Image: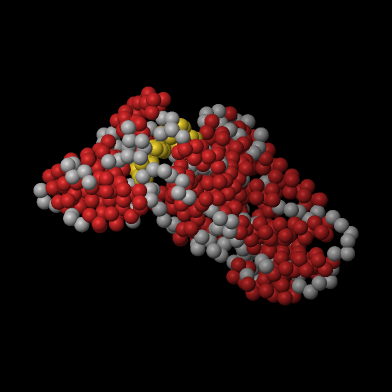
Length: 578
């Protein structure tokens, strides 16, 4: 913002008297001015006698403003110049200010010392005078006299749009004009003209603008500049916050600080979480904090949560006819961030609404995500290992067998017992010893084996496993689609019996089940039946069999879709089937 520094330098050097620094709410206008003023003060740039900063927040009269200008002034001139000013005022014994001040204190040297310390000596002196019996009857007169002594000041008047209802803009602009033209002051006005609550205030400002204001400067920093004022590289959440600030072009420093504060209140709770979970939290937290704390036209937190429900950023690609321009702009940015219907949205929203983190809720959400992360990571490693076997004739025997053993030891059975058996059979077929792995599985899962959660000994080739499973009492019971899909959706894995049952069902059977409106139908289809979409088979025959099963489910959905326009919309939007 060097060009603004140069513009202000030029303003203070020429005969202009009133400058406006305008910009959106929270972008750092006051911070910029304070930095400029302190820098120039250290360089002894200013030629004025004193400086006063006044916020109009809650001010209801011109008298309040004048009194604060006078009483809060700090020196800019040298001690010698101030002493000359003090002597000149004190020598005028005919004026009532000197007379009343003498009643308050006979030690004039204290006032001089106060001036040397940078305090407006009249402001301090008059406050003392007001406390003296009899003299306090003249306190209003003292205030007017003090205001009359304001001359050759630098005055910053901030937060104009937040003034009290009793103060009219025309009164304020009249005061500014008097300070500038009659008192020789340099006046800096800081405000956001788009934040005037009262249309009459804006109208009055526009009518006085041309007569009173000499220079107007627009403070519009880049979002990255304001982000760097708040975050440093290495801060918790730095990368995620940077991406969100860029995506939504967030320039409001207050909002960026709120994001950092939210991170600070949760960093300890996420200290042991995986990097992917932490990143998911940080991205969603920054987006929701922006929506919650920002002013202006944009989707609310609740609208974002509602539109993300049951899907991911992909669902935002299909805009609705009644979507506002603001929501479409949000959707475009959200797609870049790849937002999802994260379980973390709930604890983040709760924090924003109640002001403190819900430790218990967040810990549960993180634990669920970590479990899914482990399954996804193992699944990815599993597919990578089998790709080595299927797609080359390289001498990579050790790499493949070591990878499979590592996956089995790290808990592959939890993501699919069928995969476990396939790996055990493969390793035995190539001459590898799997006894320790089998023993460990039996000991670690004996209760689940006895309960029949892994099925029975059917199709198990390994002798030790067969013996362990032969103790399972197999109960003959009729399976139904609803029970099987609910169990798969809840556990995120399936048994061979479940898969065999599902792939033998017909289009009409799935259609009848869907039309029976079972509880949690959406979950059972997306996380139950369509969970198989992510299953990587080992042979082409298995892939054809899986595709045939998924096509049967798809045809059942299409049959539902053909019944009505509403059902067609449901099937398309919820399951991606047209």
